Length: 216
Image (cartoon, rainbow, N blue to C red; front, side):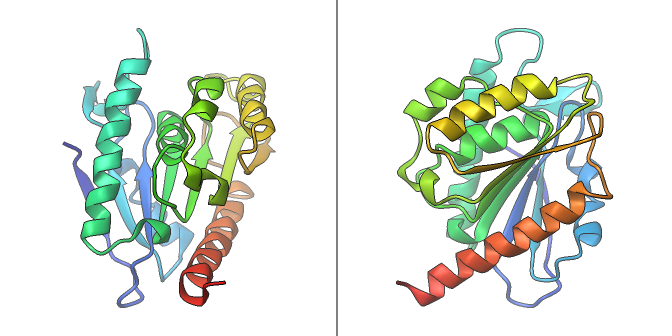
């Protein structure tokens, strides 16, 4: 079971939701800055703790050994969370996933396989486990996703070139990923990157709500 902290949108009645997944050794508390900094009055936030304790924080999967079992377990937990959120009045098409580092990996591994359309995926400073396997297991809804993945060219923990290569495999397989690089280390840049994320989420939710209400 995943623990989390919910922040209500300032706009009354909004069902638009951003599910935030932290990186290794961090926690939901590490992202309490996000709602006020992004400043999107129509957006609710669910800050989620990963399932495994890790030196005072939490981890989504084992970094030292084989990560795949932990990724699969955490993916199943996130699938159940998304299903539960839909039952609680937060429909998947109005729900986006955001993740940093390990959370980025979980965002992509979960969001691209999730059987229902999500509003958007945003991944920062992470990677994907096996892009070829992921392409084989894509949800039919993946082609409708808005996806932004960013990375730092000076990242000492997860080299930018390795992530770029895996993202290109997904893009070559038809996954509509917007890829952006920034001159930063393993962090979130508040000068260029956060404004881009703010604009991306605004556009993604506008498209999502428009397609839901207007039809074709």
